[in-house]
Picture 1 (cartoon, rainbow, N blue to C red):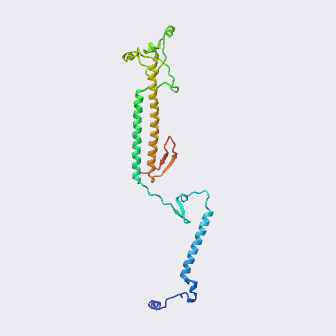
Picture 2: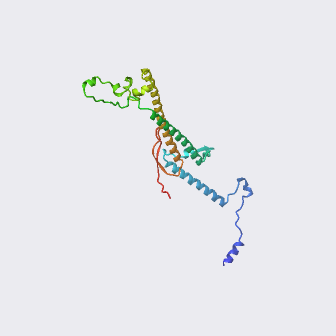
Picture 3: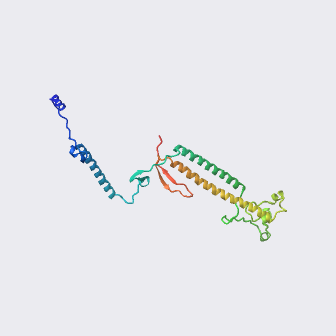
Length: 254
């Protein structure tokens, strides 16, 4: 029976739809059933797409933002994604450049620290309004000694150096430098002015070292953020005087 069924199909006449009659050729191509099915399916697909977009537009939040707003452009009435320029440097090259810059900043900061230490070792604190006003109390036995008390003689220094809190040389050192006979107020002012200039330099170098330290922290944080695979959470925003603070998710090392 199966063989007879196959034989009957092989000898059956193939189905053929008629073509457009010559008298109706001016009406165009005669649509067949398969053509109608393709046209109907395409029409239904477009109608469903329009309904879905209408529903999406009705449910859309007007305050919502999505990145395609700024990453697409309209060309000939069609939205197309903007072509992003290819990066000039690879991630490894960028990390190397950041490390080189960071080494330079670290070197400059260490240089400033060394200069600050040298200045501090050669200077003492200068009297100023913010410094604590320390007192040196000298105890004597009688009122007569109080009236006749000579501070310069007691401390063994020149009378013009008694009220100084820094670099109060003794008479012996002044004799060695041959300054006892030539010491005057003008020389003291000159020395004091030179010291004040060096202290101002010290203050500027300390501030510069602090700025370099902040720059170093920011560069180190930027280098760590270049690895986008690690998940992190921002705890504090970046400011002029501090780098941003992040907390990385703990990753178990194998």
